[in-house]
Length: 469
Image (cartoon, rainbow, N blue to C red):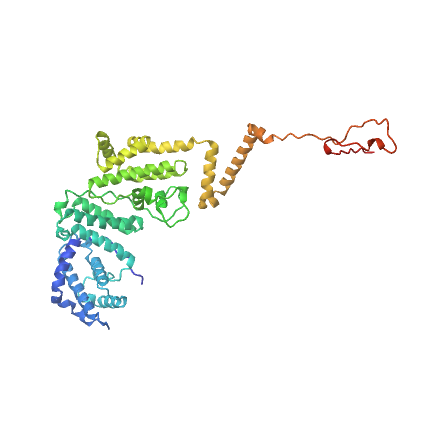
């Protein structure tokens, strides 16, 4: 039988679970229903360790079941059996239990759980979670633990508390969007709702200084597709591919670091607990976007990337950008983000104004620029793009041939109908040498031809003429 895929959304009540777990660690030996754990057969030094873990599991289950048995309204949504399985997996990894001993423990619990579980809540819920799923679940565990955790864990310092929260949140965000874990993405959206409802239950003093969590977009599969305008940005940050789809240069850390990170997260911003840092990040992203567009202005596919960026990112954060623009225009802003706005305006004055007034106008400007290119330039760009795109070579072979014929005909008519033809038709003038010399009358020819013995040819050349008979 195949191993089931675990449910990631099991940490909403983590605060309760952790509180009960603390009690279990000191009182598990008092639970007599866990005595069946003593009969586990393990032939190594870890037997005592495994028996203790088994008894803690039984005690933990009994405590959770008792805690929620009268909660008839929300009990169907309680997922403590699923959490118990994660907890057991977590403990086994922490204590470095071998794979062989893990299987022994799971089998022993599965064979005996009915002694304490009349309602079969643990049925099909006890299994070894695969490494990939466990990695994602453990990230969520750390995030929720950080969210609920006591401030004393972080030396009563809000800055350190928020730094650790940012690390855990951004790890989950990266795992979700950049590595393609759609299940984790779904839980992240639920976590955002929980955060918006109540920020840091045990860290009230940090609420005032913390920012809202950015909105999260719908997860898009990162698998390659045949669609021309799907997930273009993701193609620009890949490092494994040798060919560049859409013929757009890939983003580099040197010139597009923040923009590259944003696209890795499918246009979702990482968490910024400091307002100035968030605004600086946003201005860097916009500056790098305009810089990239100017670098690749003659690329036929640039407008597709621009459209994606505006739709997925800029429109979502347009209100915040307008606030930044207003703030930077109204006074001499000495903040870092103010300097980025100033640099952007000095280098890309017209572009930043178009985006500020209407981002779609910036897109329209690029589309018009391509349309207004000379016909020959446009044909050459199209041919170049098609030849460089390995996928297009087979798909658009007829189009390629047509374009090449068009270029040939264009050059042919340029040759025939313009002054270029006269240049090519010029020939070097040569002195014509007659094939035959004209006949001359000879009045006096001596038989011995003695009169011509001393004749010298002109310029040292002797010429003969031939008269056919």
